[in-house]
Amino acid sequence: MPKHTLTQDAAAKGRAKSHQPAARRKASETVKLTRQAKQMAFLEIIAQVGGISKAAELYKMSRQQHYDWMTGDPEYPALFEDAKFRFVDSLKAEAIRRGRDGVRVYKFYKGQPIMHPEDPTKPYYEIAAMPDNEIAW
Image 1 (cartoon, helix red, strand yellow):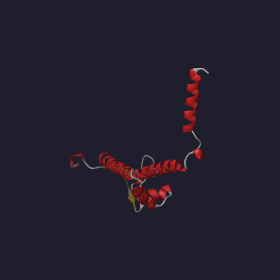
Image 2 (cartoon, helix red, strand yellow):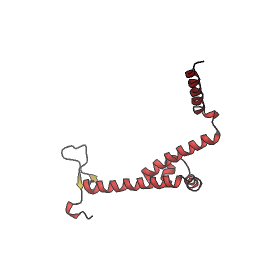
Image 3 (cartoon, one colour):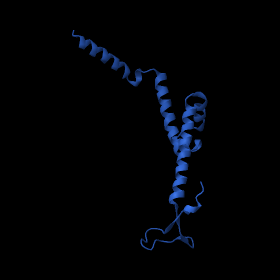
Image 4 (tube, helix red, strand yellow):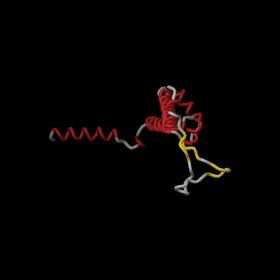
């Protein structure tokens, strides 16, 4: 046989080992990948909502699972800290945006929203923002 055929056969055998069906993989490898995927998805929710209880509710898992990961997985606590910092950063960014751009303050009269004079289908609002000279750094 030509030399390149042996090389191709060896490469094909190497690929076959790495692309085995999930049923042929060791159970511990499958569980590890699944746990990591669950952790990463849960941490993405933590980064968005900030609370363990709310994130667990949204992900449909128990809060205890998070604490089990904290004590049982040496890599998870650092990933959790990163997710918390990302949440805090998003809060800071929103606070800065609201301070810079202001927020909508809808106007009411006797409990009913005042409608915009130019477009009666939309409620009237004003932008409430802090004056530039009052921003303290």
